[in-house]
Length: 117
Image: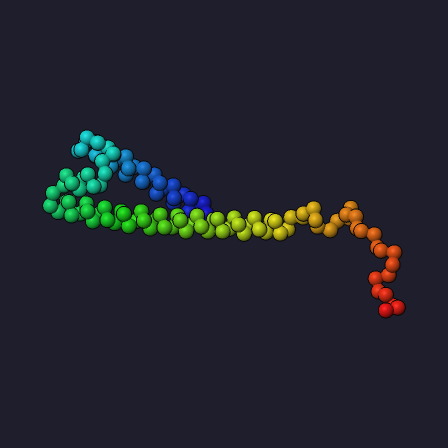
């Protein structure tokens, strides 16, 4: 587990460094570090425009896949929470559960079975 977390930290650091480089490049070239891929595509010509269009489409697909995975995870977490809640409610004693302090109705004075019928 710790190896996995260390590997994740390496990836996070690399992503942050790439993001910083991307912002600096956008600011130097376009004067706006918040420029979108569509804006860059509109300014590009020829082969670069086509490459940016393909990148934008791949990025859209990746974002949609992550969104679907997040939605599935949300549903799974909700179902798990419902299951855990149901199990807690099942095993938690309630006031109506039998206990030694509970009083019972007295037995009637007459027998329950009439033998002279």
